Length: 84
Image: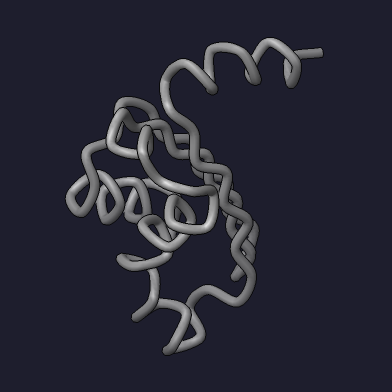
């Protein structure tokens, strides 16, 4: 599954304000930003993103997933730290 298909899958399943997906083979890195994450713990945020991906993980299309899930406020702060 390519990055555009993954973005479509996640955007259809979640209410995301921003989504960054990087895929190299079966390894996927995801940064998801949503106001819906505001009252969720870090684990619950990741579980929300894992949910739509579970069938792809189960069938082996995705082997490893790195998820960073932010509220818009957290993302505004942290993306400044990530920029070179």
